[in-house]
Image 1 (cartoon, rainbow, N blue to C red):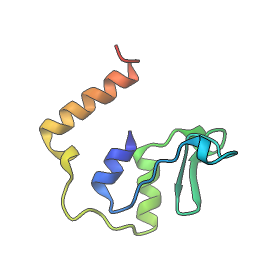
Image 2 (cartoon, rainbow, N blue to C red):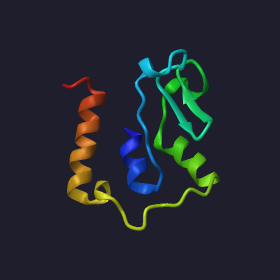
Image 3 (cartoon, helix red, strand yellow):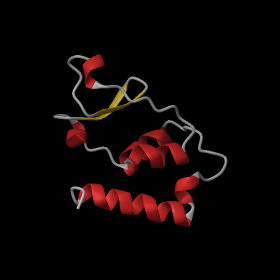
Image 4 (cartoon, helix red, strand yellow):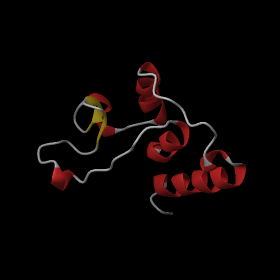
Length: 92
């Protein structure tokens, strides 16, 4: 779920595209502009992390949000981390 954290940190549009709308594109894949950052069967085998994406955005001097997003509030972050843990555990 690096998408939510990226959106709370950087001022960058995020677009989610179903693989059915991009035949031949490996899914999952993450782009910044035309630059392929990660993709299934390619770099990082489609496993995008916050740090991988943040490194690219920082090198490109993408502006950051003027104030912290909700994910950085303790109560929201606790629930967000619990949700991530549940997903990693397969919903158990």
